[in-house]
Every structure is written in structure tokens, then in C-alpha cells.
Amino acid sequence: MDVAVLGTMIPIILIIGAVIMIIYLRKYQNEERMALIEKGLSADLIQLKNLTNTSFPLRASLLLIGAGIGMLMGHVLESSTDMDAPVAYFSMLFIFGGIGLGVAYIIEEKKAKT
Image 1: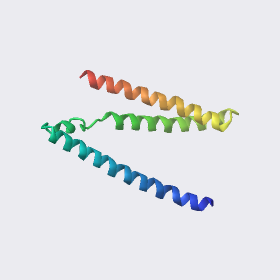
Image 2: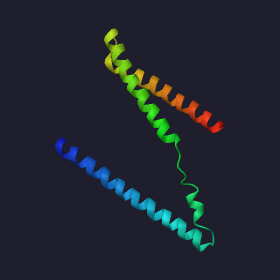
Image 3: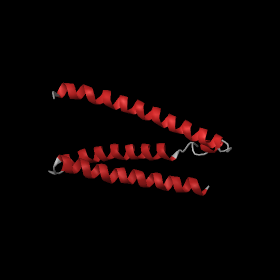
Image 4: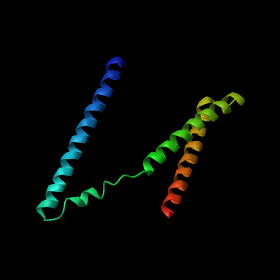
């Protein structure tokens, strides 16, 4: 298969897959609500699971900040030593990404205590 054809098919397939996944998730959520109503329970029990959680955006943002700093430090490490480029970049990405996730964990623990 030609690379150009494959390059255009991948986004199309991903979008179609995402739409189908959302449709099925909504369908099963509706079936779950109908089953609760048939049993005589309140359908509001499902809404308790859907409370907004701020920990994912915090984790994602600090991970991306750490990855950005890691890329910068990988460039500095590559240019200041004669280390291979992939080793410098990947090592710094993992180190600073892990530091970002550690900081997110500490912030979440402090928020949970209050």
C-alpha cells in the first residue's frame, strides 16, 4: 500500500473508531440507566460516578511540562557531550516526565489532606 494512501486512511479510521466508541458508550450508559429504573432504583446513582476529577488535567499538564523540560535538557546534554541524540533525549524525557508525575502526586496528596 502506498504511503500517501496509508497516511490519509489512518486519521479517517481513527475518527470513525472514536465516533463508534462514543456511540456505544452512550448506548450502554442508557441501557444501564434503564435497568436501574426497571429495578425501581434511582438513575441518579450513575451521576455519582461522573463527578469531575481535577487530578487528570494536573497530571497531564505536569507530565507535559516535564517532557518539555526533558527535551530541552536532552538538547543541552547532546550538545555539551558527544552522547548519542536518542539516548540523551529519551533519558531526559523519562527522568523529567517522572519528576512531573511525582510533583503531581505530591500536590494531589496535599489537596486530599485539606
